[in-house]
Image (cartoon, rainbow, N blue to C red; front, side, top):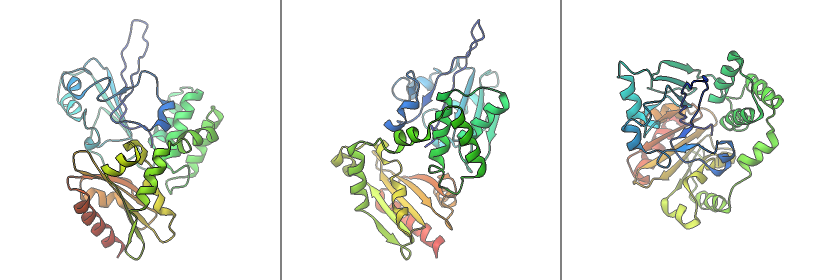
Length: 309
């Protein structure tokens, strides 16, 4: 997962303290709630888009956007960031920390490394270079960031550096077994019901090398599942030996379709997603289409099968 779209508020007090406020632009699975401070803001709850547009963030000295540099993924704050970047007398600074291939957001400082396995690796390096100590909670959060973005150290973005960082985080107090159980073995029954329904939609294309699954609003309603329960379902068809690429189509409330793309090899899903305005990594990407699922399926299946042929 790695926690997306983070904003940090830094205001210097008389004692020169640093106050930090975490804002998430979307809901988070219960599996990750243990990582969040009690005072975490969620867009639409503790703060609204209207409040942001009206200047609720103007007193923030520093904004940090983590794990994305794409304006399309910053809905709810993108307009504010654009306005601030065009305000000549603004003292507010913007720092971007990201490891994705595609992005159009620029800041006063950009810590971008597309070869990093996760944004967590960049943050870890920042801690090391700055000489900041890592306590047990920070180590746990960074271990989850690195672990989830590498498929718990299974994906091809896993390197010797990844394991070196993981070892250091364990030394600082991260407990891999407990973190794995919390993230991957902590699902409610509704998620398993949703997985069962989703696998019933499985269809194979391109000589069984492309797997396609879908989730509709009715499926979510019928099993009492939430959108946060969809996470990682896209990886399930990869258990089929012949499958190289997977497409998961998810019907959104407004009738649009969110598509998650994954591949083991051969198919650069980032390039395919970018054809439709999305992006991500070579092996994991996403895009939202204005079309309903049937039309979205046709477009993406054609694009992937063309690559596989």
